[in-house]
Structures are given as structure tokens and as C-alpha cells.
Length: 433
Ligand SMILES: C[S@@+](CC[C@H](N)C(=O)[O-])C[C@H]1O[C@@H](n2cnc3c(N)ncnc32)[C@H](O)[C@@H]1O
Image (tube, rainbow, N blue to C red; front, side):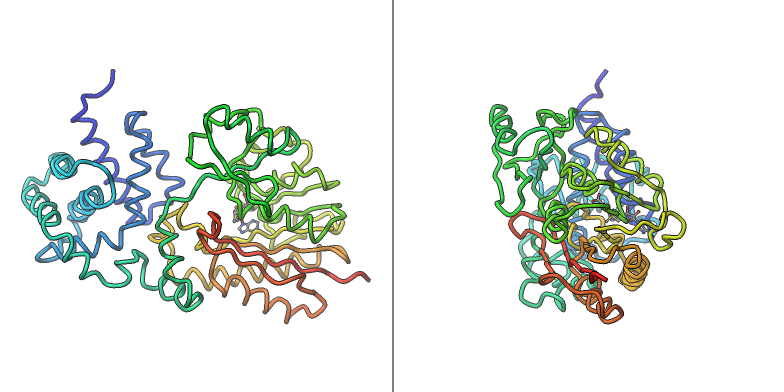
């Protein structure tokens, strides 16, 4: 039996609040925590919970600035729940179509479940004062609050992209569009676009990404014709460039190593291309590797890929000594190109992570280079927009390995560029002996 509306509205806010507390305590990422939280709300409210929590992550720095101005003194650490509840209320008032009276009244009702009756008045007053003073409050926000990015992150974006930083920050706070990858083994892009049109789903193509369709409006994956049959996958346009760049720089195909493969989007795309005699897909995360198996199974490509649990930094533990003609190193990175899809990055990443990631990326490049055949190509990719992880990383690698040559210029896509995620690509060739 479904819950009465009022009770369910309170529960939805209460569960959103619990998730916000978990994220603040760094108890896990949204990818892990959200599905668990969705189990605790009605099926019809799961999408709403996701929209709110994504929105709160996007705007949490702005909300901190607004609520901070409305409180006469900061709340105690043990009352973080009350403070975050105020943020959730202001978020609904500012960023959602929730009716103002519902945003205030329903938020205040959550207090009962927190068993802090003293907070009823203060939450109510903060939300009502926000309604009255929103314009002045917004005008008094600092830059990091206005763009809703942590200071350290905003500083790097400004330094690396002095002309584009505002556009980058605005794109980071948008919801990413839905991109599809048509499985060319099952049919053509045009015929799939017709199938979408029959279901009243409009999409557009981008000439430089041959298997990609950009949906005008996002839909649940289950609504996509032929999804279960493997006719289609969800993958951003920028990520789809990996397969295409490999084909451009290593047209002979041969043996491909996908060195950081999970959850398997790029492995599957390479397998769909049918260009490789063998594909070895490795990842050191066993849990994430399960997604590679399920993706390949759905696409009926399991026979085409050898999936291996292993550490790409120590090839002796998994490499059979046969060189690869192409290597894709989609390296672990800051994820600063995909903040719009993973807004919890703004809460969970620390400035100190970057140095460790840069060191790991260099270690992976150095370890994998010897496994590349003479005449082979290594494509380095990240979903980062930081120069330390990208062009400077590649510059240092080329200094350490003067025999390696950069093919073309590096490619940096910034978030929102033609609807795509932020991504970086650099292709390097090993000379023929
Ligand atoms: C950016 S993700 C890869 C995304 C994937 N290529 C795709 O398109 O679906 C980076 C991956 O690197 C893996 N990883 C990190 N360090 C690794 C290492 N030393 N060896 C192998 N995999 C590693 C992580 O587990 C993660 O799955």
C-alpha cells in the first residue's frame, strides 16, 4: 500500500538529509550511496531524491553562503543535520519548482523526525527570511559561493583556464545531456535515429563522432528501443572519441590493451568496432570489473574481450609478453571534466588528491609503454581539465621518453563544449625498429 502523501514527502526530505550527512562525512560517493538511499523511499520518488541530491551537491557552496548569512551564529557540530536541512529548504526555494509554501512547511516537518523541537522556529525563520531577502543575500555571496565551487578547485580552474573559467564553472553546475552510442554491429546510426523518432524521441548527430546521438530530452534507459538487446549504450560524446582516435592513429587494429577498463564503456565501443584481433581489458577494482562483464554480456561481446583483474602499474603480473599494437590508458583522474554528471566530486575531492593522481598517472604511463609494440600507439585519456594531469603530464612523459612521438596536438574538450563532458586525449607513437 502506498504511503500517505504528507508522510511520504517528509520521508523523502528526511532521506535526502541522511544522504547529505553521509556525503559531508565522506562516507562514500553518490554512485554507491544513492542506490541505497533510493531503497528507503517510494519507487515513485526515487527520481526526485536523485534530482534533489544532485542539485544540493551542485549548489552546496552557494547554499552554505546563503544559510550562513541568515544564521546569527553558526550551529554546533552536533546540529549539522539542522544546518543541512536549512540548505535543503533554501535549495528547494531557489532551484526547484516546488511551491514555496510546500518547500517551507515540508522542510520544517522533518524536524519532528530529528527529535529537535527547538529547531522548528529557527528553520522556519531562516526559510522565511530567505524568501524575503533573497536578492541581497545573493549579492553578498563570495566568488566561490556564487559559482558554487570549493576555493581550491576554483583557483586551479582559473589558473588553467583564465579565459574560460566562468563558462567552465557554469557548465559544471548544469545537468549533462543524454548521449547514446549506436552499436554499429546491430544497425546504422540513421536507422536507430528513425526508431527513436517513432517513439517521439528527437536526437541530433555530431559529424565528428560517428556512432553518437545526442538526445534532445533525457529518458529512462528502459525506454530506449533495443537497449536490452544491445542495440544502444549510454556514453558521452567525448568518451566516444577514444575508439575513433585509436582507429585514426592505429588503423591496422591488431592487439588492443584497455589498461583501466572498468566500467567498460570504451572497451565495449572498441569491441563493437570489430577492428581488433584481440582486446585485453584490465582493471584493478574487482567490483567495477563486474560492470565490464555485464556490459559486454548485454552487448553480446563477451567472447571478443579478455577481461583481467590486475594492476596496470605491474604488467609482469598479467602480461603474456606479447606486445600490444594499441594501448588505451583511460587513467584514474580528478574527474574535473565530469562534475556535471558527478557533482559530489566538489564535496569529496581534496586539493591534496591531485598530486597523488598525477604521480599514479605517470607511473601507469611508464609501466605500460614497454608493453607497446614498435609502431604501436598509446592513447592517454582523462576526464580531467587540469593541465597537471593532462598536457603537462604528457610533456613530462615525452621528456622521459624522447623516442616517443606525439601524434597531432593534444585534444582538450572543456565541459559543455558541443554538449560534451570535459575530456583530454593525447596519442603517442613508438617508432618502428
Ligand atoms: C576513468 S576510469 C576508466 C573508465 C573506463 N575506461 C570506461 O570507459 O568505462 C579509471 C579506472 O582505472 C582503474 N584503475 C586505477 N588504478 C589502476 C591500476 N593501477 N591498474 C588498473 N586499473 C586501475 C579504476 O579502478 C577505474 O576503473
